[in-house]
Length: 269
Image (cartoon, rainbow, N blue to C red; front, side, top):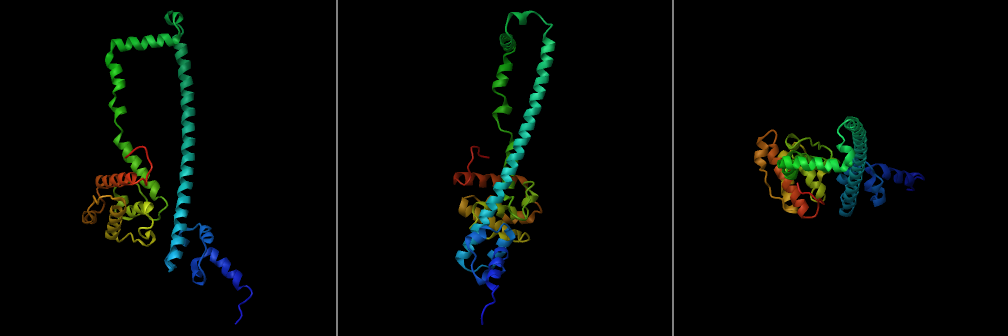
């Protein structure tokens, strides 16, 4: 029986948009790269049987997640640059106003300023103040606020890092170190981000809390050498995990990633 004249073009067009025709032929890497819908790639992965085909689809998924992440980071960087420019503009305007006010206030005062340049009088003033009160110089040199990092800032930096790394994953919204991690999906997404071949993220069930916790912790221990600091049974007994425990575990996981060279950073959290 001869095939209709339009059968070939129809099959080719369908293969570009839907996963239903994979049984009639394997999609090429170029066709997979053209798909920008993560759900479509996940459906293709669920139906794929051939090992090489599944490997190609997983690679396309990773590339798509990377593109989304880079796009969001670029947009975030652009917003931060705009805010920084606005702050600098406001600071410059305020500084000009302060300088005008200082000039008008200092004009009628003693003729000391007429005998010495402004820089010299400023230096003399600072030297005199330091001699009168040596504790001022010491306080500026050894301020505890400047010497030690703010713990609250470190916590927020780690939370922002977790949010950025899991942002492309569906079903994950990280707002804190407690309720956002209660079903184990956030742990799995964070681990999967660095070890995407370890397990299939798309088949995870948010209601299977125990399975999610065990999968995330065992994978992190096996591939990142991260010790299982959290007890699964304790997590199951609590409606929301203790934020200090989750925060400590994420810190340890981050440290292990840094040691393995999977996270490039100048500051260890």
